Image (cartoon, rainbow, N blue to C red; front, side, top):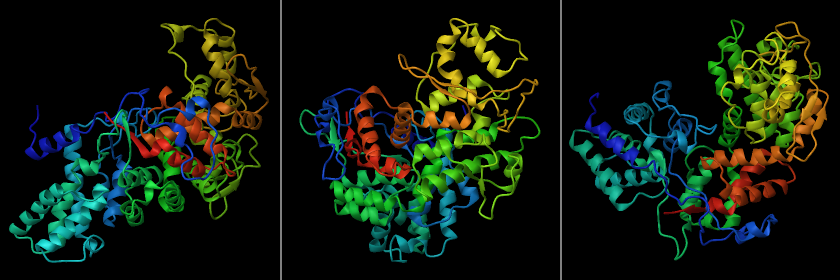
Length: 559
C-alpha cells in the first residue's frame, strides 16, 4: 500500500463522509402532497387525481459532488479568476454513470481524488496570485487584521460554500488566515490564498450539501431553505455557483416565493452559462465524447472527430438556444447545420458561409441531429451495425430497453457475413426468438443504412450490397407500426412519437437531479411534461424552467 500523507488522509475522510444517501427510498410518504403543483399562480398544470394527492420528494436524494466542469465554473465565477490550462488539467475526471457525468452513481471518492483536489487547490491559489486585485470582489481590505480576516472568510465562505459561513467555520478558516500571518505573510490576498486552498478541499465546497433539518411531524421531506434553492437553481441552469444577484435573492428569502423564483429562472436563462448547459446536456445525452476514442481507420482523424463533435454542439447552441426553436422537432428535422470546411467537404457539399452555416438542401439524407456524422459514428460500430444504431435510438431517445441476449445468441449465423445489414436484420426478424427483441429496435435504424460507419453517405455498403432506408417505427402492442420510406419520413414520425417527448423530459430531469428516474418519480415527470407542453415555444429553456418550477425542486427528502 502506498504511503498516504496526513493531508490526503484527512481530505479522504471528508470526501468519504459525503457519498451516502441523504433521503428516503422511493415510495415513502413525505407528508407534503402534490396539491401545490401551481403555487403562486402561473401556468395551471392539469394532473391526474393520483398525482394531485401524491407526496413530494418521494425519490431518493443523494449528496452530489461537483463534476469537473462544475468545479471549474464554480471557482472561476466565485473568485473571478481565469484558471490556467495546468490547473484545469488537475481537476479529477468524471465517471459517466447512467449516461451522464453528474450522476451520483459515478462519484465514489478515492485517495487519488483527494490527492488531485489538493493539487488543484494549490493550482487555483497560484492562479489567484497572478490575478491582480482578485480579493476586491470578496473583501475591500488589504491588511491582515482581525476585521479584514473576518470579512475575507465571510466573503469566501458565501461564494464557495454557497451560503453564509457558520460561526465554527469562521473560527476554523480564520485560524488558517492567522496562521499564515504568523508564518510571515504580510498581505490579505496572500493569507486569503491559504483559506481558499482549504475551502476548495472541504466538503462544503466539493459537495452540494443540503442540511438534514428534521421535517415537520410525520413527514420525511422538508422545504429547502433559500440558499439551498439558489444552489439547485445555479447548478441546474448554469452548472456553476450562484452569482451575487442569486445570493442576494437568497438572503432576502425571495426564492421561497414561487413568483420571484420564476423571475430568477427567467433571468438566469438569459446568461451565457445557460447556453453552455444545453450543449453539455446534448454532449452527454448523445454520448459525443465517445468520438474521442472511436476508431474507424486512417481517414478518421482526431481533427475530423473534433469537427464532428463541434457540429452538433454548434447546431444545438445556435438553433435550440440562440434561435429558440422548438426542441424536439428541430432536433430531428433541421435542414441546416454549422460545419468547418473540412466537414463540409466530408459531406460532399459546398463551403459554409463565414459563420459556418450550411444548407443541407443538397443532401437529402441529412435531416436532423441523428444524421450528423458524429452521431452516426458513435451510435453504431465499425460495421455501421443496425443493431447498435437501433439500440441507441431505443434506449437514448425512447427510454426503452431489452434484456441481454441469451447465451450463444450472438454466435448464431442467420445470414452470410457479407450480407447487408438490412438482410441480416430481416433474417433476425424472421427467426424466433430473435424477433421478439430485435423486432422492437432494429427497424429504428433502417433509415440509417445509407450512412457508413463514419456517417458518410453510401449507396452500397463495404461488401457492395445495395442499401435501403425504408422501414417502420415500432410501437408497443397493440399499436400498429408506423411505416416510413426514408430518412425525412422517419424523422417526422419519430418526432411525433409520445415516447420521445416523455423520454426527453426524463433524460433532462435525470441530468438535473443527478440520478436515474424511478417509478416514484412518475408524478414529477408528468408535471414537468405538462408544464413543457403548456408553453408556446416548446424550447429547451422551457423544459429547464418546467423542471425548476416543479414543486419537487423546492423540497428534499430526509432520513
